[in-house]
Length: 239
Image (cartoon, rainbow, N blue to C red; front, side, top):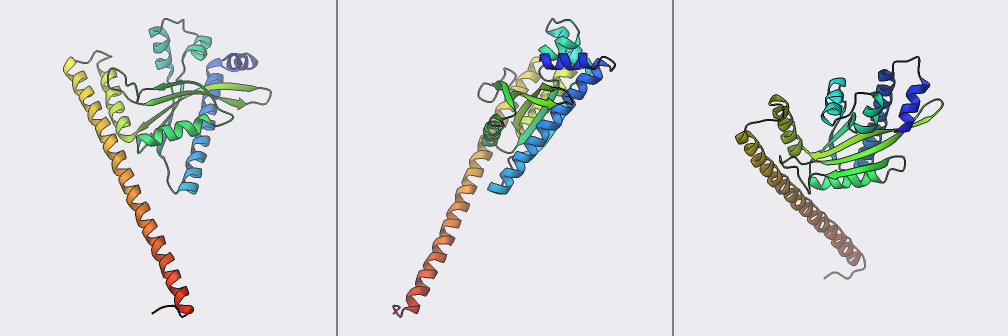
């Protein structure tokens, strides 16, 4: 992201870290607003909101440094911008797996968001059992004298996936990535249970929607029949 590096150089009298954090915080605000508008539009048109929760976060300096070291990069602002893609993160929590792909499609069609990469850990889960849909996007930040494209990682997952991932994250840091074998196995078993639960809940939701549609169709048919009956009575055609 050369524009971000140039933006830092344009603010030489301001601390570089504060400048870059200003850009990432601005990008989070932009993406968060877009997602809230999409959710509100969906509620307006379909009377249904696909997003249960929106969470945003900026990676801590310690986490950024740790990730740069782990990947073998020198600690610098330029390397941070170039190689760390999840400094600004947005997490969307949905009810059903179908919502995940619906939201991903809606995000991908935003004209001022550029999708840089996609990682579908739902169709291809990690070895640990982790499931989520990741999108790396860039959003233009309009400054007084320039436009800076800034990266934001968007994670989309169901409530059940998020519950599992939160527990896995705590265990990962507690054991520094070296959890006992039986804990890792139990976590994978839980991931399988989460998948079954998500599938069952989606199937149940589809059945509920089908029932509601059938009920609506019967109600409309009944109203239509009553209208026809009323018309024939007025014409003296009833027995």
